[in-house]
Image (cartoon, rainbow, N blue to C red; front, side, top):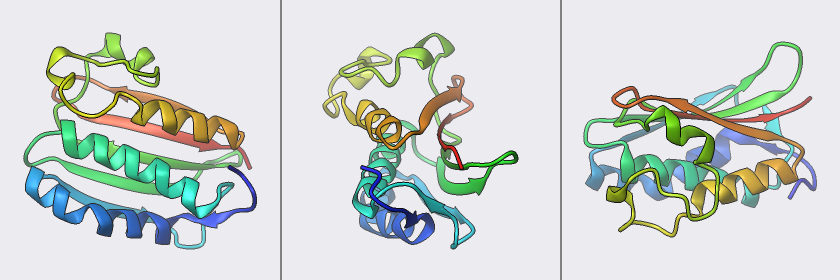
Length: 151
């Protein structure tokens, strides 16, 4: 998972390009932000898996008119954070601690889509590379997933 480092922004831009048609059909706008030279301790394929799974989650659940931003930022005190945030439907706060469990569904409306493994895979890849993940949000306020990698 963490053999070497990868410049994050070009990989995230490629993911957004791959998902652009699906995002357009769902009425979700995808965008990438961050300094091009920032690197994450992941192979590019693993970084693409994280980006794809988080962006796909937003496409499926954020709702029409939502904007999902994939960004990379240097964290004060060291480390780099990959943040995927949308301003869509959000998730009830009681579901946040369980979002990264395999097969967990936040509500019944989500049971018909996907495998329930996307966010669990994100956590597995991030933790395997020495990082951590967290989620925040609320109904009507979107969902933010942070993948932190120490420097």
